[in-house]
Length: 126
Image (cartoon, rainbow, N blue to C red; front, side, top):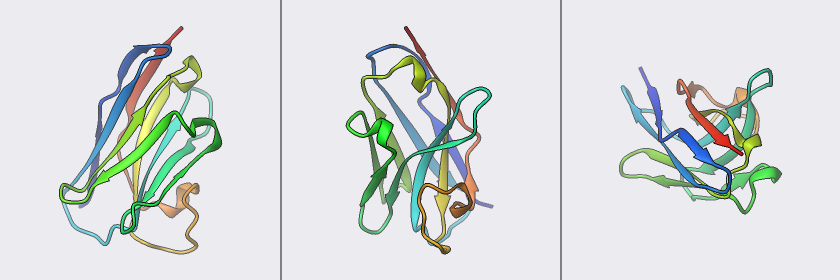
């Protein structure tokens, strides 16, 4: 069974940086894309960034463009989220997701992803 495990969350001051990692274990699948979502208390889970596994093409939600960077390590089946200039409104649980390649291909949709991690807490203090 495929499992995703996030790490790297924590407490950081506004303006600081964190790098999240997501590793895959427990099985193999044809990985089409991986992504990061976040969920703040009382809010829905929201798309942040995605990376197309074969090409490395990246996609971001508007609010994090220029501050967040998603990257991948193909050999180790790991995806990263570099987060810079963090703001208190970035406080949330961050989830890693993996897609095996279903359709339609809409990277911002939760339903596009078959596998999810348990999440890692990111707290940004002002």
